[in-house]
Structures are given as C-alpha cells and as structure tokens.
Image (tube, rainbow, N blue to C red; front, side, top):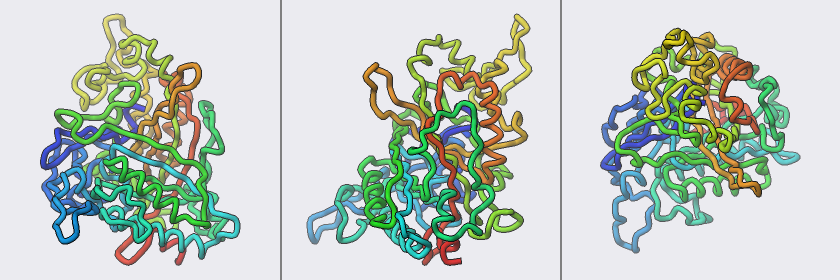
Length: 446
C-alpha cells in the first residue's frame, strides 16, 4: 500500500497558503505539483493539489466570508485561509479526484428504492448536484439547512458521484453500462462483506473541516429522500493541512510513508492513465472525462504488524520507515534499484517487498491514482483496533489499472499477512458537469 496507492495529505505550515502532500500512487493539468506553492486565489483551477502525487496546494488567503454568520447589517469577518479554500463544482472532471486529499472524508453507497427508475434517478442527481454546488461554495443548502456548518467556509469541500454496476439494470440503461464496469475478479486475499460492498450509487465527500464534511453527508442523505437508501457508509481521516513543518508525503496507520509513486499530472501520459478520453475509447460517450474508482476497506492487522522489528517492517515494504527512501539507497524519490545486492549476495529490496511488486514497470505500466483515507472504527472486546485504509484508486480502465497489480499482490506480497480486504466496490464516475448541467446528465438524458 506504500507505492502505488493513496493520495494522502501532508501539509505545510499554516500561513497564507497551506501545502499538503498526498502520496502514492490527480480536474485538469493545472494541478499543482509537489513542492509547488499555490499562486493565490481560491478557485479550483488555482488550488488543485496533486491528490496522488505529493504537493497538494490547499490554501490561499481567505477573503470570502462564505457561510460564516455575522450580526445583521454587519460585514462578516474574513475566514482563515483554511476555511476559505474553495474547489469549483463545474469542470472537465468531477472534483475530488485530482484535488488535494482532505483531512476528513466520508464514503457512502446508496441503493435505489423499489420503483425508482431513470426519471427518479435523474431528479436525484439533479438535487444532489444543486446541493453540492452550494455547499462547495460555502453556502447553505436552502431553507431547511441544518446549520451544522454555519460558521464555516467551503474548507476545500469536494463531493464526487459514481454509478455502480447494478444502477444500469435498475434504470433500464443496460446498453449504456461500460464494459469496464464488469465486476472485479475474486482475489485470494479477499474477506469481503457483501453488505458493505458495491451499491447502485456511490458518493465521496472530503473537506478540511469535520463539520463541513458531516454537513455535506447529511445533506446528501436528506436529498436522497424516498428515491434511495444508504447501503453502507464509512468515515475516514488524514493528516490536517499545516500539521507538518514542510510539505511531505503522509503516513498510514502502520507508520509508513505512503504514496510516493502516485502518477503526477506533469507526466505526459497522466490523463491517458486516469481519465476516459473523449474519443477513441470503448467507453460510452457519457464517460468522456470520467474515471473509474475502485473502493476497498482494507483492515490493517496492527497488533501483528507492531510485533515486527523496524528492520522487518522496512523489508516488508522495501523502503525506510524514517523517510520513505528505497532500501537500495537515496531519498524518497530516488528510483529503486531492484537488482542491488548486499555483502551477503541477497537482494537489498526483498523479492516480495510491497514497493517492488507495485511498481508500474513491474506490472506492464499499470498505474492508478490513489486517494485514500485512514479509518478507525473502534476497539473490539479483545483490545484489537478496527483500523486501516479506505482505499480509493482512480484509473481510466480498472482492468489495466487495479486488477493486474492486485493479482500480482495476491500471489506473493509480504504485506498481505498484515492486511485484510473486507469490502469492495467499483464505480463509473462520469466527467464533470458543465455550467447548467448536473452530474450524470449525459447518461440519464442522453
């Protein structure tokens, strides 16, 4: 899970602008690259962070008061830069894919209610899109707003929508279902809970303020009304912006730097790997500018992991725990020397090290943009923490992205002894909504 996996946030010291590194394995080429400071302003095009590459620019001086309250007739005081950061709803791609990974997240799947068809689904996506556009601008949802986030601004809120395999049969749109959305194959390491897997609709919510994130979750749930019911819901977190003295790749709950080798928007083939092209693709036209999200709840067996020595943990991952540098030498970003041997003639990076197995050049170039959250859902009666990673990865084609890498991990990843895949989902995430459109309109009204 260390190399070709999550965009985790690792921010810089809070000031006028906050930088956050997401790591691992990002809605356009304007995404800020690692260690590139933002140039000011609060629009999405200026503030996009590399959700999976490192160096996420999260901030700008906050001038907008957003949803912050003020006495009648008085001008609201400016929000801090963290609260004022705004991501734009409209764009070529949906928000929440290449944007900086936020400190708080919710993943939720819905099933359409009996009798809900294409017309009702379109009305639901229209409601969700209108609510999301207001919330991402730091505004109230309407007259029935709960006021949970009344004193907050946008706080980099993003809301992302996707369709599951079952959605298309329920709405009579089977002919529009992408082939790439066929169910994922079974993997030997899976211990999947069907009740917490898949779903007709999927929503990803992220924000740098916990109340803003919850407010969005509650609004989306209320907007579902009688058209859909929650199938499952999961909560996650990441390092907060400004928590580190300098931008750096975040760590997961195993203490490992996680996400060093995420694809970067600066790479010439980034769009081809992550987003569905407008032409020349087997995907239906409504998926242009979209992506496929694989979502997995991966429990970390922390008690077993923490019994290992520091050296043994490094051998499992193939990188130094202190700074993420490959065991073969150099810094975090130094290419790993897979052939280097020690004085004993043995490979310095073990043959089953996680970072060796997940390298794109060891998987026919397969790459995915990881944008996960950590989770902790309590401690059981035996004192064992229910904690791990809410794995979310993005790719133009899961058959060429996630599947080959996971198959190889299945066959001999040293890390597999310390993790357990407990739920899974695959969702088609359409491109962003243009001005005047709602998300998914080209599918539901095409």
